[in-house]
Length: 234
Image 1: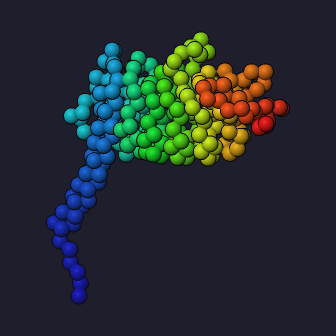
Image 2: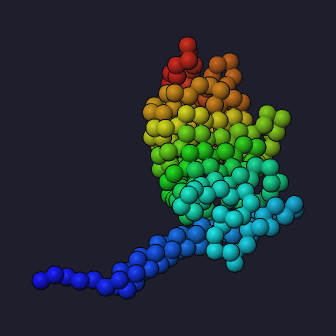
């Protein structure tokens, strides 16, 4: 018995498949758009640089400072020169395809580690951060660049990272560059995993007479020495 499929049925099937693809893309865009719009509600924008971030538009790829891939998924936020002030929001953890994020203040939501699976660069240089480093950042398996440096002139500022460096960050196998200089971290510098590839330049502001102990509040008695670019725990 020969199965005959009409031309109309083929057309209807193709239209249905196109509708499904469009629906998935639109849903993804709406989720990402909602996450970005949540950021606009949490920041002060004196220059109105986020004026184009219109929540009534389906696709955030048309917004300034937002870059998307060919599939319409947000991959980059460039807010470094936007003169924004305010907090990173947990909703940003919904940007699953985001690769580059920079420039805000407040705390680092743990949701960023839970959701930003493709993040390559987390650049919070010269940001007014008042938090500890969340251990969930150890889930960012693609992370290569992590900067939370405080400028040396502002090293007495109250806006700094505090607490200890989570040991789980040593699991970041792709980490190439880390800079937490001049913060108020305490404890000791991890010496295993990806941290064996880092130099003392990552921790400027802590080194005193070649001692690499973190001298922030509640610091431990354990001391780490550098000798010929190797780390030794005493």
